[in-house]
Image 1 (cartoon, helix red, strand yellow):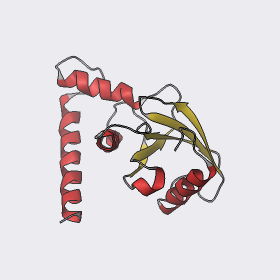
Image 2 (cartoon, rainbow, N blue to C red):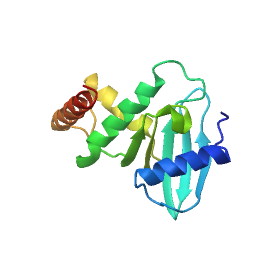
Image 3 (tube, helix red, strand yellow):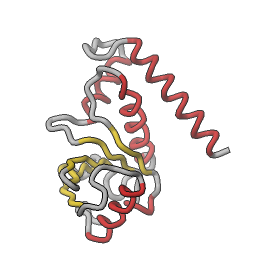
Image 4 (cartoon, helix red, strand yellow):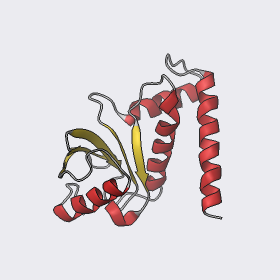
Length: 157
């Protein structure tokens, strides 16, 4: 699959989005590649007046890149009730039949990238200061991640 999303791929993605009650249901879906290559592919999705972002690994990505998408989504979802700047996430897809790799969809926020928050979290883990992230946030995030991991384990038991 090329980096641009063809008509059949857009149709599969639109069906998946409808099944997950994402914004813009039943409207035509348009996608524009914003960034891509060796790094993750980022698409701006426009549907029914809604602007969203789809983030997925690059084509022919090395092993482990699907887990990166899941990890990014999980961290961003855990930040939902904090004052840490982030783009709200809508859904994670781990079914390779939809786009060939895991991906997640989040709100489009001009000038914001998940890489920024991931760098902030990483820097904080090294003891560097981060103005928006205090220790209590990490506790909340850790509890949220543990709860999600427990629920996921129960689903696969």
